[in-house]
Length: 149
Image (cartoon, rainbow, N blue to C red; front, top):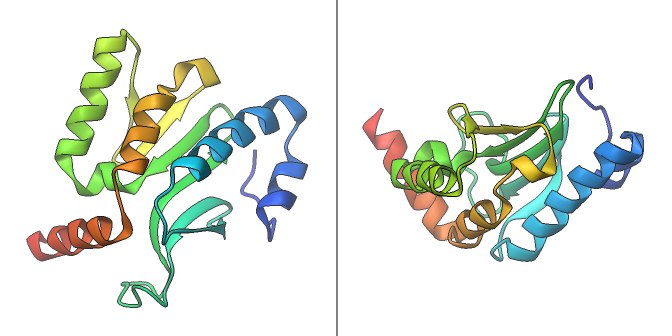
């Protein structure tokens, strides 16, 4: 799918083919159920994005809200961006171990977890990571990462 220009999550979901909408909606709903208080869901960067609002953390390098996670239907796969995985290497290690223990192939870039089918996504581990990352913890990890660079 080309990058979406949808202004709302509902508009984004409506433009997806039914089978792709079902996968995206399932992952989105699960994340929203486990998302700690303080993050906001909106459309940004052409995908569903969960962010720390500027009112809570205005000191970003690009003037955009601090991105925590994002979800999109790409041309040949689905992409779940988990910025907390990129920021905190123990979280990445836990994700890698969970996939290995489950006997599943992990397709992970710096923070982009790619999957072709919902069954390929280890959703319980993703939700554990999401639920275990309150806004204050994420901001502290983000700031610690900035100090290292």
